[in-house]
Image (tube, rainbow, N blue to C red; front, top):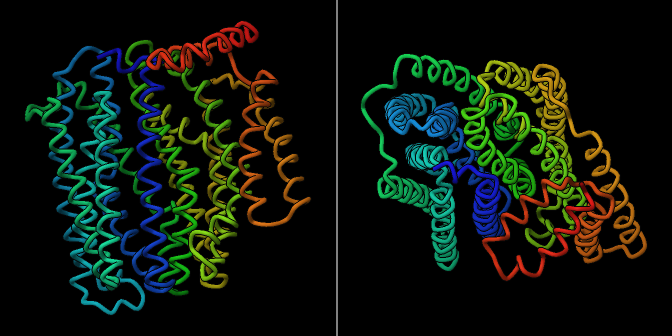
Length: 514
């Protein structure tokens, strides 16, 4: 089992998760484009709002249970105690069922005040679709989290790819039938049920079963404490991560603006949120296992490397995203959705700059510092709410984007300063500066191309030029470490054809970095 948490396994897991996530995202984006073009801005805004509401029900129903499952299942395995892993699994499963039941009752009671603006179907249809989709997806997320604790990242990968393909099949059939809004929402609910079925079957086949017996008292105390803080954290994060803005846009502006905001958020997910969640998916069990084996010193070493990787990926996303956002929106969604471009660019910029938050969150979760995460999340919620209520009713979509950007940047700065001082982290400043310098140089060259030959196709080409230049300059200016090359060589051993051709160059590069 420990081999599933090795350096090569970590890279392999990251590739698996990110690969399946991007396949899923690509198919989901295609689904979004088809539905948006078919329904138009107003009905697509209502569709987006119901999907968002299902996500809120999922997050509130699962609250901190999934993060706690990853943390303590993986840590138990790191201490060579599979019995504790099964008992933690069962203890959390029972609490998830109770939480989902409470969420369902609460949502039905408040549904009259939560329906989409201009909803023409029955209120019962809204309630059923949102509840079925949200609760079914919550079951899947819990199962996938337990599997990650076991180092089994394939549960998430297989479920997401399979059901994404089923989703596009549903949507294409509905498009051919010229189906209305409600039909697309029913398809969304059915796909969510499919996720839960696949994950539950894979857990049972993989022997990842729960036990009714509670964990030992010492473990139970730690699990309860971690869960309490994580519940507060998840709820604060859920309502501060574009949720208040989405609700206010629906309540005070209109469904079309909800759709524009949702498209910008979805497109930025491909370059920011999905990458951050993929990193978090891998880093949490790896750090948990390392903390179980070697304590804080071992976890801090992984943290330093993670921050470098996050900065590299964040800068790559900013450069490419800013260049291709305008032509991307025009080509995919058409002229009716031109208002998406500015929110998208802001979200990409903010997301790239704060990508390291995934590493900070993983470190806090695995070192029993959930309280600090909760403080920052609550602060973020307060800042977001203040700016959202002040800006969205007056400035609409632009106000929603501004409140999101201000809260994310401010809170990330506070998190970075607080954690580095509290944990006494030694940041890899030399590599940070070299990565930033390489990004600036590559951005200047790609930007010069756009200025010389204006046009959307030039912007697309400039995005590819930036990516190639940025990668090449990081190699040329030694922005990496020899250990990074070693991990890459270890990973490529699984692919002999590539390894034979790349090994010589990588070995020479590693020697130069020593």
